[in-house]
Length: 431
Image 1 (cartoon, rainbow, N blue to C red):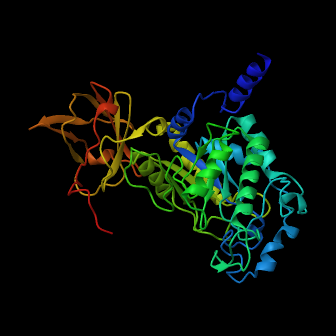
Image 2 (image 1 turned 180 degrees about the horizontal axis):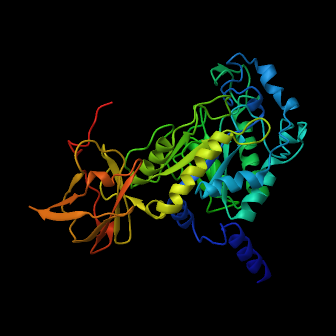
Image 3 (image 1 turned 60 degrees about the vertical axis):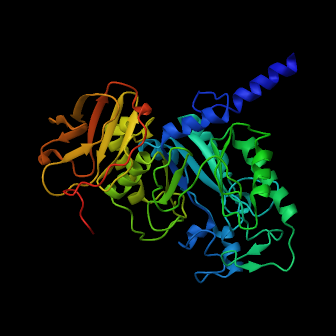
C-alpha cells in the first residue's frame, strides 16, 4: 500500500504544470494547444561570435577547433533566469523551450555524461537549473530543445560543417544510449517538463526515434515530444513559416524574431505587425507559435527583441481572449485574415484590407448568428441573403494591425465544419 501511495505522489508530481495536473498526455496536449504562444531560446558560447548556433561550427569562418573551445571564454555574468521568465510572461507567452544541447554538442547543464558542458566554462553555473527554478516560481511551463544529432560526439556518424562529413568510425547505437541517458537526466533533474523538443534526426529513422520517445516516457508518461526524433511524435513543426490550416494533428510554427536563431549583432527585428500576424495566423490555422530570441553573450536578451515582445504582450492583454484557448476556424485562412473560435464565439481577424469599407461574405454556418460587434468598438451591420451571411462596417473603424469582429452564434462554434472562404476582391493587393 505504501508503495502504491508513493507511486501516486510521483505520478502527480510528474504531471503538474502551474498547479494543474494531467491524467494523460492528451490532457497535457490540450493545455499546450490552449496556451498557443511560447518562447524559444537559442543560446550558447557561439553567441561570442554572433554567428548561427551549430551550423557555423566548421563554417562561417569558424574552424571546428576554435568553435569547440569558445566555452572557455563564455562567462554570461548578466544572465538572470528570473528576468527571462518575467519577459516571457510580459509577452503573453505561456511556456519556454530552451536549448539544452544544439548540434554542436555543447551542454548547458551539469551533465554527468560529458565534460563539454557549462560547468567547465568560466561561468560555472547550471543555466538550466536556474531557469527551471525561475519557471516554477513564476508559474511558467518549461521544455527543452535537445538536438537529436550531435556533430561533436565521436559516436555520431556525421560531423561538421552542417553534418555533411561522415566519420570514418562511429557507433550510432552507443550514441543513441547517450541521447537517451541525457534526455532522462534532463527530465529527472528539471522536470516535470511540458515538452522535449528534438531536432535534425539525420541518421535516426522512425524506429530509432520512437525508441527514444518510448524510453523517456518511462520517466514522464505525459511528456510531449515533437516530430524530429525520426519518429512522428505528438505534433508537427513548420519552421520559419506559418503552417497551413490543420486541425487533425497539432502543430507549432517555430520562428525567429530576428534573422537567425542565435544572437546576431545589429540583427533586424521583425515589426510588431509581423510578430502579431505570425501569432494570429498560427492560431487561425489551429497551431501554436514558438517565437525565438537569442540572448547576447553576457546573458541579456537583446533590448529591441525584448521591447517587441512586450508590445505583443500589451496587445494580448487586451485581445488575448481571441487567441488563448481558441481553435482555428471555422473559416480557413484567406488573404485578408483568419478566424478563431471558442464556445459560442467566432473571432474574425482582419489583418489587411484595402479599398472600400469591409464587406465580408460568409457561407451558411448551419446555425444562426445572434450578434456581431467589433472588439475595438463600433457598429457592425449584419444581414443574410440567399443563405449567405454578410458583415459590413465603416472602413474608418479598421485597426492598424488587426481588426477583430466578434460573432456570437446560436450553438457551439466547434460544431461547425471548417470551410473555405474566398479572398475578397476589394481586400486583395498583390505585393
